[in-house]
Image (tube, rainbow, N blue to C red; front, side, top):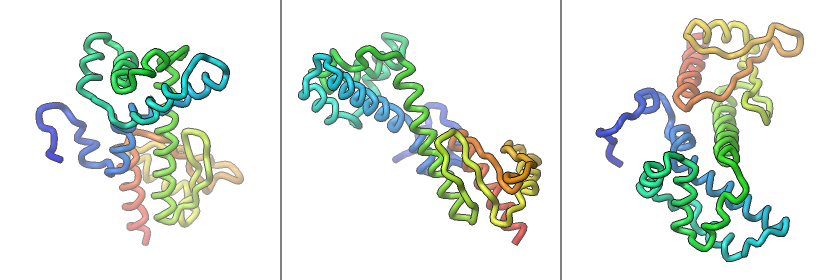
Length: 205
């Protein structure tokens, strides 16, 4: 795909983010997740007894990923509201379901839940990459993970990252002083973190 040259793109993403991180935080993933959330909402409401037909749910399920971003942009220009824009764009490809898309929900239903889903997937990617370079990673359902460096000397790595302008958490307390707490960030922040950690480990070899 040719690089877009007419509109602003972040050089931090272009230089630092891995393809999988950039894709995870991209528009396609975000808005297709919105559609999946709307589908699950409709299924739950049908189960609770609302007048939602199976053919409406079926039509939604067939159009989770075919997002027309040009139409969505036109609707957003009209409504000045991103959620309304994507409700209408989804309704165009799933017209039978249009009356029940987002039924009874607020904008936070899709916005906040999609952010949580994407951040959790980002943490899984980060955890996998850290495990691949020798870190012990503890499972987490929060927006951060606890990790132990390969040599167990978390304070040295903490100080190194702080000098490099990267903020993670270190608690000099029994039971966790050999660990760091790393929160999810933007894709470029995650890749910069990983790059600095790799350099740190290489220098200590």
